[in-house]
Length: 69
Image 1: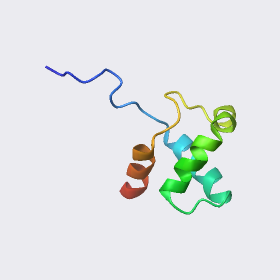
Image 2: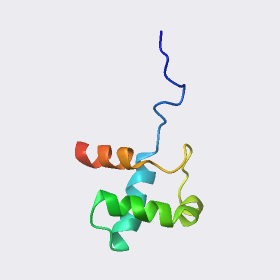
Image 3: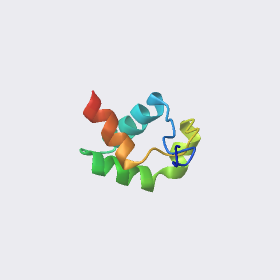
């Protein structure tokens, strides 16, 4: 049996993650930690410009994407 919550692995749009990272880096972020700080500071702004069907991606999600590519 699978005891995990149904949304254990929520899916985020790659375009949302890339745009979030682009916005953060053009604002001076140089690491994944700084991207996460930007994400927290600019949440309202991000919700206006990004789809974010499953909310704002977590630090782990952002890090996982950039370690993969």
